[in-house]
Every structure is written in structure tokens, then in C-alpha cells.
Picture 1 (cartoon, rainbow, N blue to C red):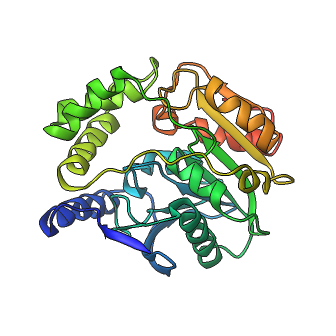
Picture 2 (picture 1 turned 180 degrees about the vertical axis):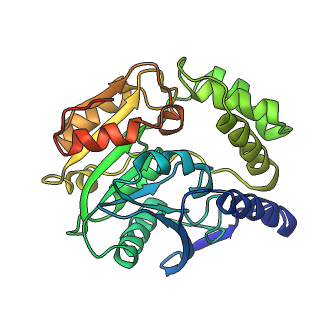
Length: 292
């Protein structure tokens, strides 16, 4: 059911995991870390705060330790639960699902929700995390979906410019090449911050010590239509290099019954580019007036 480890060596796996633990240990926000036994093996979740639950599912090559600023923006009004996806760099099991990957991730998401929440949670999925959320089965414990720069609705747009920043990063990763890739994936409003330096460091570790995965294919229409009757918000940056509004707008409208929130100035890394984005989308989900 699962493939071999994503890490290129045991030492590389330790480097990646140590980075995550150090980052979580330095997080000033009170939190706790749990290890769950799930359908896809051990899964690490990080939980902070009290209140209505929000489950954050990160995108490809990201994890809880890279989403702390996103979590802080949701506190203290929510309980934030961040889950590291198995088969992605982080603290969960290092094996990717094999055949039927998204279906397996969907079952995994339901398993996680069943273990961490006694009431409805809003699932916030970014990129790959959005496809994982859509692959899950609607259930009473899922109060709504927020899908940001979502995979799973359409194929990712791939361009020569993307290859121009990705191939050097894969072939000979440096912090500079990692930051160039991050800038390419970001919109024009993003400035270089302390968080950017950390993400550049992280992406360098990821490229050196793990095998990255490709963007998933679109989910079958019947799987997407299962979400009829569930509150769903779909948002993407106007400058998203993979999933711009024109690419995901049609499937979102036809299959999910919702228009896309096109966010000016942001790219594919919207939750990291502007940490107020997810709180604003939560307001939109519940019909409150604030907009991103």
C-alpha cells in the first residue's frame, strides 16, 4: 500500500526531523504534540488554542513546523490542529501511499479528524492539502472546507519558467535557489521576511534529503460532488503560478457549487504570504463581513 521512504538517507531524515522539532520547540505559543496511529502509519499533529476547531493540511513539501505563523493568526479564537502528511517531509511516517494515493489520503484525513476532534472542524487545505481534504468523505465532524490554491480540481499549470527555478533547486540546492523558488511561487506583494529565510532553509533541507512528489491529478467528479451541502470556500492568488483563478474557477463552480475568491497580489503560497488570509476566509465561510 505504501512506497519506500521519501528520505535519501537515515542521516537526512534525522536532519529534517530535527529541524521540525527545533522549530516547534522554539514556538512561543503554548501547544502540544501528539502522535496518532493511522491508516497510513504514525501521524504527528500539533495542537494549540481553544475554541472552534480548524485542521490545517499543508501543501507539498510543507508541514506543521512551517505553518506556525499561519496558526498564530488563527489564535486565540480557534483551536488549531496542524497535521503532517505521511509521505511528506516532516514528523509523520516517511512512506507515501502507493496506488490510489489521494483516496488513501482522504481515508487518512477522516482517521485524523476522528482522533483529534469531538465536534465539527473546518478543514483548511493548501495545495496538496486541499486535494487531501476533497478526497475525504463528508462527515458530521467536518463543518466546512477552505481550499487555498487547491490541487485536486484541475491539473497544475507547468511552464518553462517553473522549470527554470525548480531544476537548479533539485540539482544543487542552496538557500539562494530555494528562496528563488519561493519568490517564483509568491505574488508581488510578498517581501523578504524572517519567515522567508526560515522557509528557504527548510526548502534546502527538503531538496537535499528527500524526494519531492508531483502535483496530484484532478479528483473524479463524483468524489468532488459529494461535498454538495457542505460549506466550501475556494480561494487562490491572482498570481498563483500553478492554480490561477481561471484554472480552478470552472471546476469549483460546476462541481462544488462555489465561485473562486481571487486574491489580488498573492501567489501560490497565499497562507504564508499573508497570514490574515485564512482568518478572512473563515469569516467568509460563516458569512461574516470581513474579506481577504
